[in-house]
Image (cartoon, rainbow, N blue to C red; front, side, top):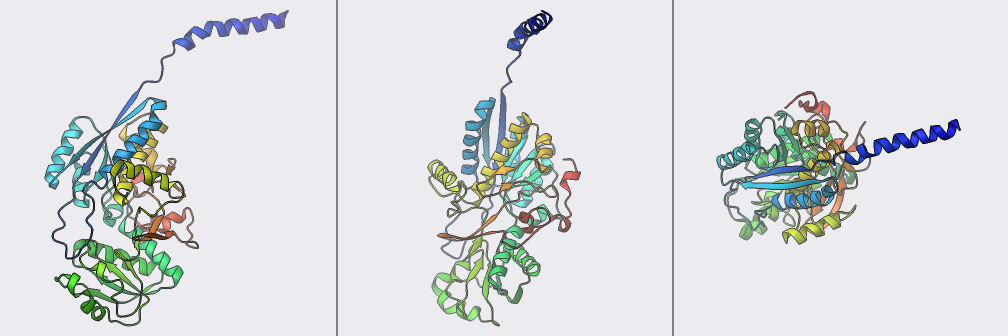
Length: 396
């Protein structure tokens, strides 16, 4: 009898509590607004037939990521919206950013040069900015912006990806050709660092100082220009594309070409198809009517990383998302065969780097055999002991 009464008591208790369970409020809907800010300075006249980057590079990736985030977020009653602004000048973009900031937006994806990114970071100190447009190494090393994370690979990551592959192939003697722009010099610095890290020798370095159109003179000038001591490969630092496209097949010695032309390292490329990437490529092409490039992927990854943090936290508070992102407890899927995460010291997204030529994937770095105490992905770019940044120890 006592057991019967006990069971009855339990049933009565459940019955008493049932109305309160039914009356519990449903999870509140969460609306997340993300700002997309873009400004690309005019590169000036280009001395070759280089195909220009699409004017909507980055934006289309962010748009697709919003669609992807809404398709998964609807089950949690999370909705995502993108507010876009592009500027003809840096000042114009800062004004548009100020309007979005005044409207309450605190999460941003930025496709802009390093100098503009620094200004935006200073102007919006309590916002979280995702850098999807600048590969500048100083942003990940000397200049530590406390409220910025980086989804675009740095120049040092790209150069290290090349350096590892060339070390595996034992193409250790380099002829380095460097263009005249500040960006060319920065990329050349990354290549010099990679050469030192992975045991390569730069047998000769030549500055490109010609201002003529190589379309008509490459066959005559390039073989003479590339005369040097014995080398295994030609490394080119020509980010704008003034002359680098005319180096392959025109060198004095029959050697491969890599760097900004020839075989290149990139955050993303059309030829990346494994680990589900082909499905992402198809969805992007259906959306944008063109191929996905590295800035599209960086912007897509930026929005998706924000959405992943919101899903985990059930909050869109910028400081909380930053803290979670830098904690190492936010694994991200980027269709690259490994879980990606942000480095806690400088906010750079760890990721494999594809090595490609225009129509095929050559390899992926990090290469086999390049080991690291915690993650082989940290063999690309500035590791914690090499960087002066300590973002996880600072507050924005």
